[in-house]
Amino acid sequence: MMRPDKLSIPFLTVKECDEIVQNSDQWVEGTVFKFGQLIKQKQFRSVQICNGGISTELEDRIFKTIFLTNSSSFRYHLEGYEPKDPPLVFKYSADREDHYTWHSDSLPGDIVRKISFSIQLTNPTEYDGGDLEFMPAITDKKIRDQGTMTIFPSYKVHRVSPVTRGVRHVIVGWIYGPDFR
Image (cartoon, rainbow, N blue to C red; front, side):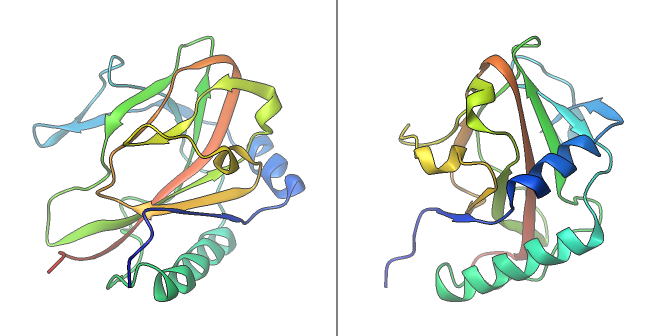
């Protein structure tokens, strides 16, 4: 059986998305992991990240959905969230020319990021650009639907294209497990 390279599924209602965005504040500048440390490098990644805004109930709901999806699609050995790396709300703004260049979410270690997910919070008519794209650069328009969760292997190379109008909010997170065998 061939594993999918990504899945996009309806997950949140418009009302839930709007409430998460309204409750998100305390924004900090995003960083990248390079040379064993987190650093700010706007040429690679320009985004603001909220230090809160995701309830334990929503984390649990995301986790259950990903585990169910994994058992029928990817079939990876998963363990859960890494407490130091919880799901977060990201804000990409045209005013700041926010983007994230080509990268993968894999990190070295005893347990690794195995599944990445992105939950679209913003109505796609409110911004231009800001597309979650995968190598080869093929954009799936379903990914832009408000409330859609996109689930993909963390080793998959992807980017967020520059936002050219408006603001895009998204929840981003990772599920960990033992190293691939």
